[in-house]
Length: 195
Length: 195
DNA sequence: CCCGGGATTCTATCAACGCTAGCCAATCTG
DNA sequence: CAGATTGGCTAGCGTTGATAGAATCCCGGG
Image (spheres, rainbow over the protein chains, first blue to last red):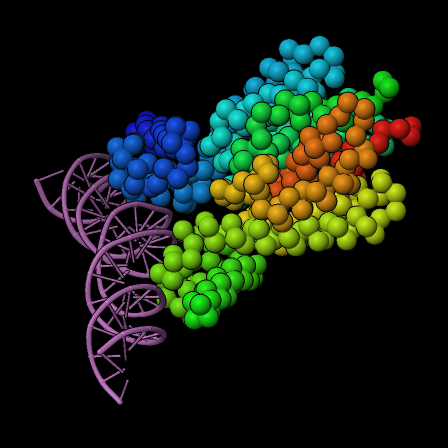
């Protein structure tokens, strides 16, 4: 069996190589630069090898997206655990999320903009996706008012963050007022207790 | 001058024909079906005529987007003026906005998702864009708390709506809970006065 | 009435894209 | 050492957005 396992190991390693190369290329030059030919050249193989690992270019993007979700989850977790109060945690998570979107636009697009056939809101969603959402949820849950579904509230807050990121990135919202918009969003989602 | 004006009139008419054909094709079969060849066949001209009117495919999409903004502005206005209280107006505008995004996905993408070089947040933005934003602003402004910049608050609310539309449309959020998420968003942006 | 000149439209083509078919060689099996 | 099989590569298909240059039309002057 050792020979077969070696083959499988090499194959898995090459698959990681593909995803990593796609990710780096996308982050440095944008997804338009990630063509199958360019990617093949990058990994020093020919084009068709890509198709022995992935069904197509979209599947490669999906793999990159899953990796990106793991990164995002880690950053959200770091931001949340460094915060003190629940209100600060909500703000910190929002700040970390939008910063991630601004700092790694290509990764963000693969995760949340590009059409991709990953199961998202179901239990079969890849673990990193659920982890990232879970981080958001943990920050949002304390803000739920009686009768609010915490998951739905999280999704709604997420939508607000996502809207800020995408509208700003595509030039629909001026970037310089981002912090104030984020503060408004956080302010409206923070527990409404204090007058 | 009559002959030249006739030429210009015919030319302008053909330009409208291009935009209308692109819009109809996109709405019925999606933007992927809008290729320059297909579009040329639709207007019964050859491919290169398109490039004598627009710089490229993106410019055609931008023209469609401007048309779409006019439609959206009209729908938002209707929803707003049919509402009674300011809270109801905010909810009605949110409902109309997300319904527009769900009902005309191709149009919505051209307006707010696709990368396009239209000036958005500046004074030079095309009138329909400013009109659509103005409708939102009129619904949001009454909710501004002392010290809030109404324009920024509008942008933030817009981001929330945009996030809901895009995340749902791309499968990131389950569609069946849309109304409840929208209600949460509206609830958090409505004037926080009543306990 | 007819023909030259200028604008305009079409035919043909380009480079690049995602993806696939089929050959060829290196490797494992008996 | 011969035969079978796996796996990668060369080559190519069909489309895409965009362009260059030929051809055509149409108006105005002789």
